[in-house]
Image 1 (cartoon, rainbow, N blue to C red):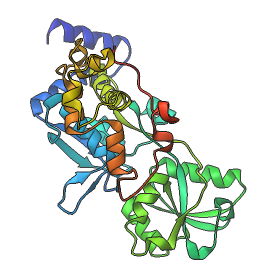
Image 2 (image 1 turned 120 degrees about the vertical axis):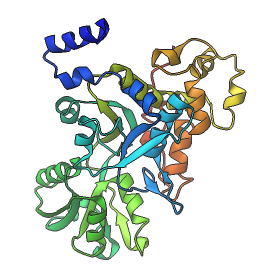
Image 3 (image 1 turned 135 degrees about the vertical axis):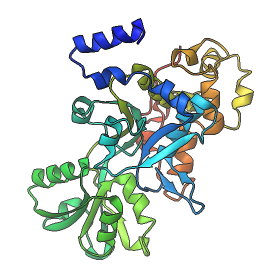
Image 4 (image 1 turned 90 degrees about the vertical axis):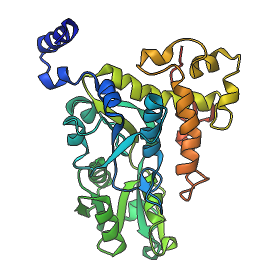
Length: 340
């Protein structure tokens, strides 16, 4: 053990941190040595992470995994995806089975402070909603008193559901399942009156139904569900890299840098674009990757707007409007710190 590592371990011990936290340093180097990023994802949600007809996984979460790989290796396919249930996702990250969790996971205070995780920026602003059969002739979630509701175990969805019905003095019967597939199949089979999850998930799951037009999504959004990638505590360099991959994609969209024009933009005299694309400064070196790291991300994966549009936006089967996920310059909430 060299002097630096001894000092790091001593410092961790002095602060009361576990040996695991101290030894967690170096995820980026381990990733480079392995030759791939090990990325925890979901079991299959359209628009976020799901195999296409050729078995190739696609979605916002998958693109984020590939953007990290692109920044490190200049190859977006140097990713190993590990499909995880909602119940198992945090254990997989804590144990080191995966390097990063990008799995439609809501950033909450308890998860941030008690699970040994750091959340690396909100890649999708979501909120919980309800889906019912049109034949029920229900127009509002406030008409769901006495309903049976299908939901997934181990999620914030269960807690939000309980809060909503209690706050509105309504009764309900919960029908909970371990996986999302089990939950949606139970709803479609008529084992419950209502299916609840994040609104993006409702749009995605409705596409799979034999008769999607027989179902409607109620207007109420009952929670804040900021979805974000997360990493383990104890490795600031890795945390910085994952966080700044997200910010880089947002900054690229804001500055008009796209997959189609990134090579042309390398000639730009705009100081912000020069810093973004690495023709000025050494910002890549600050996070342990080459200075053209953003060029790699945009060329292989795209900016944030391109990722959103093809996976869940109006150019996708889900046709979800940008809304809160638009850039701050266009009335949305997506905003990135500057690269400077």
